[in-house]
Length: 173
Image 1 (cartoon, rainbow, N blue to C red):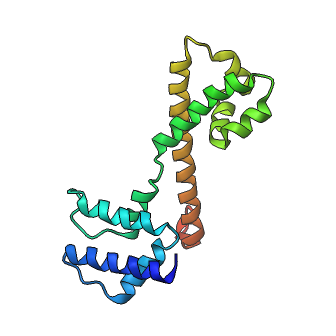
Image 2 (image 1 turned 180 degrees about the vertical axis):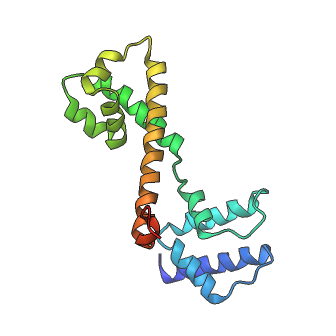
Image 3 (image 1 turned 135 degrees about the vertical axis):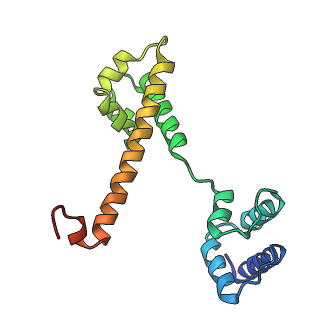
């Protein structure tokens, strides 16, 4: 984003704050500009306009809210549906004898589901035209559980790394 575009964004932020009865210090506006400057200026300005026009938004937006309007984050359900759909596609595209290419196509989450379901050959032998809906639903649920467990493990590891060690150990006094 150019200096001129950053100035335009700063004006948009200040005007939007005014509409929400907020007076932001220059430092706060600069932080918001910095948080949004990696995005295309026209999309950021449009996101502010969209935010202002939406009746459910009653408070001044955070940079995260504006970013989500431009590039919506993916939720666990969407990620899980995508993984399950890729498994179905990979079975018909690559077949039982091309597990390596199927894995490359599907990605690690879908491959984790494949492994948990007995492996690639088992998936290919199990999936039929009659049960594709049932199998895809099961794989979706398993993928969602896998994502949630991974997030919980990451949070636990981060907590363990940042917290005092003596509080995390059992039996310590």
